[in-house]
Length: 238
Image 1 (cartoon, rainbow, N blue to C red):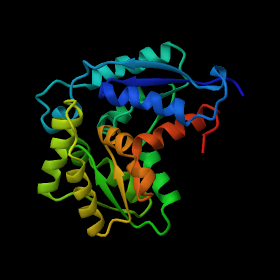
Image 2: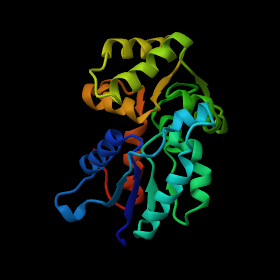
Image 3: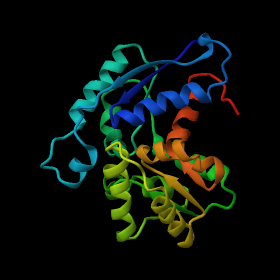
Image 4: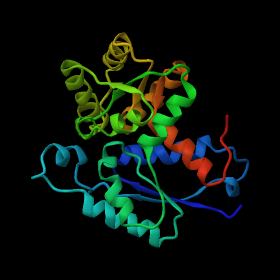
């Protein structure tokens, strides 16, 4: 099979981008350097905040920067593009219109993975930024498969935003007990599975191995890495 090159439209945020690349390498069944995926990583941390713009359109718009970065990845010879940020998929359609190579959709792939791996799935709990929640991106995809989505209540949503922005993005210690309390509340609401729908939450999963301990916790970043490996023609290390 002809070698495929993966373009990573990163910087959204920078730590999540590096973690995504690390995941792809560690999840690939490779015995030599040559058996790994070729990646072009554009870790553009100066891209304006996605949630800020979604909640208030007077704030700087990240879309023109992301389109320009996608075009750079296409010009570099990439066969696929990934954006390791759930919130950034608010702009997915517009970015895809401006390039000729496929952008792997983290939200679509995560919902499909949940359906495939969770028997009798009817309700998904979504843990995500306010931008992703406001966009309704997970609800739109889940609705195609007759899956209901539930969100944290206002108190838990506020706490979750602090975990994402005040702890992970700020490089501070994560209050894992508070995070697990939020996940527990989603399960009490009747969620059959809980999606970590923010790639900063994937950093918590990496540090505490949550999805490895509980198959009902689904890490969107791991799903994106898995699908990227498959589409680039490599094998996943089980």
